Amino acid sequence: MIVDSHVHIFPPEFLRDRQSLLTKDKTFNELYSNSRSKLVTVEDLIETMDETGVNVSVVMGIGWTNPELAEKSNQYISESCLRFSDRLIGFGSIDLSSMNAVDQIKNCADIGLKGIGELHLDHQLFSEGGYELMTSVIQEVKAKDLILSIHCSEPLGHLYPGKGTNTPEKLERLLKLADGAKIILSHWGGGLPFYALMPEIKKLSESVFFDTAASPFLYEPKIFEIVNSIMGPDHILAASDYPLLKFSRIKNEIEQSNISNDDQKLILGDNAKTLFNLL
Ligand SMILES: [Zn+2]
Image (tube, rainbow, N blue to C red; front, top):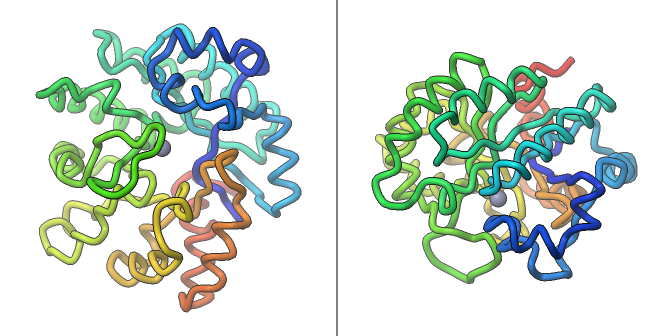
C-alpha cells in the first residue's frame, strides 16, 4: 500500500476567495500570498493520486488562526473523507489560543477526523511560555486516540513561506510533554532525527513519526538513508506536502536510495497503514 501522509486540500470557495482569505488568516497569508503557491480541491487530489499511484492520502489542515475558516476547512476535509472513504484520512485544525481547544478536538473526532494538525505553533502557541497549553491538548488527543501532527522548522538555512521557528530545541520541550501520545513531526522534524544520535533524544522520540513532506526542497536525497539508519524505518512516513510537489518525487528518492526493499515498504505505506488502522 502506498500512502502519502501529508497533503493539503481546500473547499472550492477558498480557491475563489483566495484574495480575501489572505487578509483573514495569518497562516494562510504566510503560505499562500505568493500566487504561484497552488491551492487544490479534493477532486484535484484524487486525480493526482490516481496518476501517481497513491492509494491513500492523509489530508492536513494548515494551522488556521481564524476559527471560522478552520471550522469550514475541517468540515470540508471531513466530507471529503466520507466521500472518498477508502482513499482519504483527515486531520483537523484547532485554535490553541482559545479556551475551548479541548472541545474543538472532540468536535474533530466527532466528524470522523483521525488527527489534529498540521499545527503551526508559531502562530498558535509561541508567544513565549505557551507550552503548558499543549498539556491538555495532548491529553485529549490521547483520550480520543487521535494523532497529533506538528509543522517543524530547521533552525538554520534558507527561509521560505511558512518556515517558522518550531525548531528541534522547542520540539524537545514539546516532546517532554507528549506522554506517549502519537505524534507526527512534519518536514523531518526540522532535523530533530540528527540529534537522536543522543540517547536521551532517541528515547524522547520513541512514539514519534517523522514525515518527509517537502523533503526535496530542504535536503539532499541521502537524508532518507541517514534518518533510516538513525531512527529505523518504522519512524518514517513518506509524504509530499502536495500540491507543493507530487508524491512521485518522494517515491523516486526512496526507491533510488540504498534502503532495503522491506524498509522501503514500511516507509512508503506500511507504517501509515498501521498508524491509521487502514485495511
Ligand atoms: Zn508544514
